[in-house]
Length: 359
Ligand SMILES: *Cc1c(COP(=O)(O)O)cnc(C)c1O
Image 1: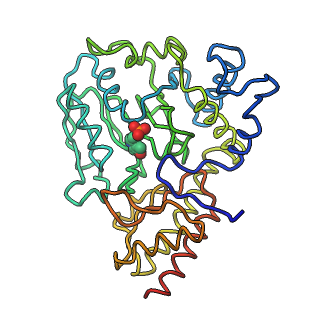
Image 2 (image 1 turned 90 degrees about the vertical axis):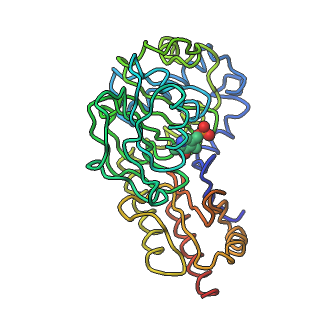
Image 3 (image 1 turned 120 degrees about the vertical axis):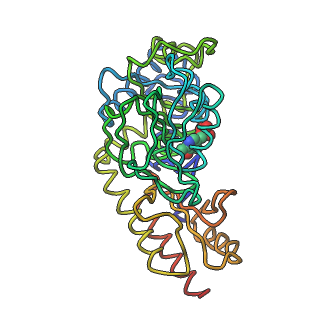
């Protein structure tokens, strides 16, 4: 079989070894006679899988004991509401940083529950940069500050962690575990799994314990973090199979050497692609250099009439799902943890070849 590289933004590529292990364990997990999909979430087999998954995540990300790890459903989009419902804690406003389409969605949803102060925005430049913190207009009475560490569509990523005096909340859906992180800087981290963690269906929340227990009146039971924390994410059925696959991904990450090792590889992959983009005027990346994402690389062709041909030939060469988001156009190469360096090298070689034929 020809080597295929999948550049999808999400659901996205998974490590091949993980898929192979899942295949091997599909019908009979560890001699249990059951597929993981068929197990009770309260049985000893699945309880062991869940515990291992949480332990590996805690070890990889260095999560302190005073933080809860929650395995939820509903996608990162459900967190756009769950965050204000739980973290306003009697206050009536929150600060948001707007760096693109996902921040904008978070802001729109939070506006249903509180007065949102957009403390900074890069809308003035079509969301192609991160506003430096020196220019932010934070509200001293905000319940929390929310930002999106990596804008999956725009390809804009914070290369630094904001310094604020209230709980810092981050949507890390598309760059979680791509580099080491200091959990203690955050009040709450959330991420849909299907970009950089595992399959769709699982939403991960890491939250500081003292922020729990004061939901807005009327908050649905399933939207109350405290309920999930008190029940070890088993108040109702968690997304068991997605947790299992995520567990395999975490074990794979440990085998790669952990987050510091992943960061090195991710930098090498991103440098390879951006250095080429900057070396030619056949292609163009619109994002400010300092704020370019290591995970999602948007680029355009000088002549957009060639887009269709580019995608067709890329596919023919085993380079899949490079079409940019429908709202942006052009191309986007998502190069998450599971994308090997060889995949990016093959993409760059193809891009050079294509440019030389169409210059
Ligand atoms: C994909 C994505 C979302 C939405 O995730 P769903 O799981 O589809 O709700 C939110 N934020 C970011 C940064 C994303 O990349």
